[in-house]
Image 1 (cartoon, rainbow, N blue to C red):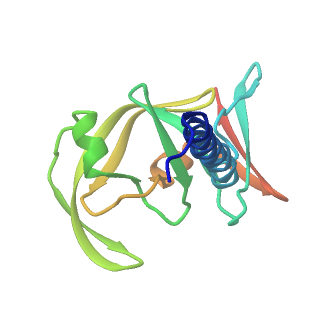
Image 2 (spheres, rainbow, N blue to C red):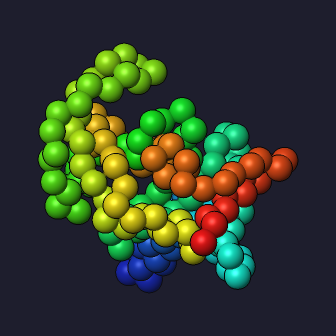
Length: 170
């Protein structure tokens, strides 16, 4: 039984419309999910005469995740007071051409692993800027960059409810 060409065209258009709608819904909901994981994608702050201050919102998992930059490249940080250093994946270190300054053994929640030391020229989180930062490159890390105590000890910070307030004194 042959179908009318108009009927075939109509069915094709319905399929194309359904696929386009699914694509748009996927794009829309992935943005919502990303926003729930990182509610601080556009970090701004207050510039005071003697300090700068940033307020971060906790995500739905109870973590503080924020977008910032390392050497002018956009990255996603996970604020981690339990991390001694800034810890970043090997793939990002290669992309940023960070130098290997020697091997290091790290103790993590998953056990002991090896990585290497490096230095970051400039790290930004909104108006907070830290220069010449010690960092560790972890070859098996594939999550957000851990923003550890090498940066946090340069700042005053306190938690108020669902917000973490970071202050860099000038």
